[in-house]
Length: 366
Image 1: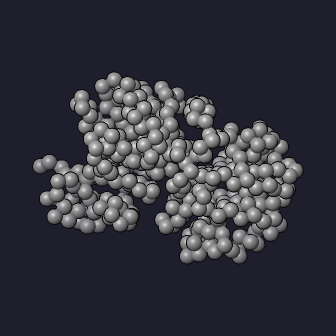
Image 2: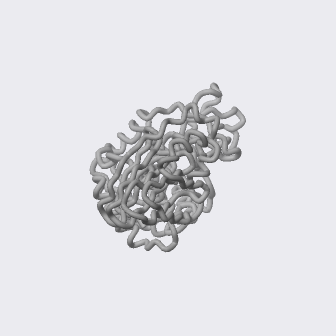
Image 3: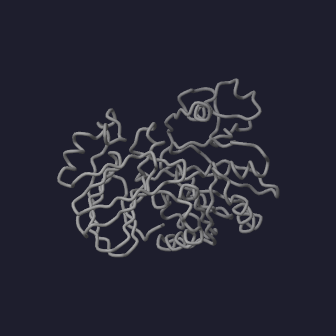
């Protein structure tokens, strides 16, 4: 018997148990392209069903990459570079070459020079232990630089299979859909969404010379903010268009709240401007440090949201991390939410994020 595979997420399709992975009604098997019910609902109604795959399942699939001979294409979200980085990938992939692609470059202000960005990515990759054969920037949604990416992939793969890897939400399936559309003219074959964990198993797309382009499941990075917000609020924190940096002139002892999801205290360093790079939909609220705790307790879920009022029971407490900015042009990065740029050294800052979310400093992206 030939196993039926869902073209949307790569999982084996069955019609016995509606609660199990890969369920589709019997009528779905008569259609030309087979799609499971989960993908159908995601595609047509933007409904998400929770999945029974564990992190171990994802890791098993990744572990298999060390046994293959091919080109690994690693995709990161340039807006959430650190949150969407797959740590330790070089340990999984054996001797296979890695091409690093930064997706969603359309979200960054147009004033940013692409050559500088590529240089920045190379330097960050090196610091994170990865030595890619090349670094590219694309926007899979808009189609920017996708032809160039396809040419590079074709050049580097030397007739071998291509494995596309990345965290959830980096736009991996959108990237592959764009390639399929550019090559065949068919649209949106693989299910894409901004919900974590859409692709559930390997999806093989045949290439003209007998090898294949393989979409692997998005690995879930638990320290991303996306896992702490209500599904309805993902569209508030996930930018869809170019972000407009917001500049705040801050005195010492002032606080910025990013909705109710994160907080930044500017403790000392004289009056200075801080540049915030977050989704345009996310409201930033300024107050004094002395009033901040009280304001948060009173207004989180209302004035300060997301999170929503009805999510507060299972929303983690904010944890404080303190930084002294020693270098000029430093970003304070809130994983999955954005970053704040401090242009001159000498500032003392405390950043608060939900317990489990990463916050860090890096040399400025912009």
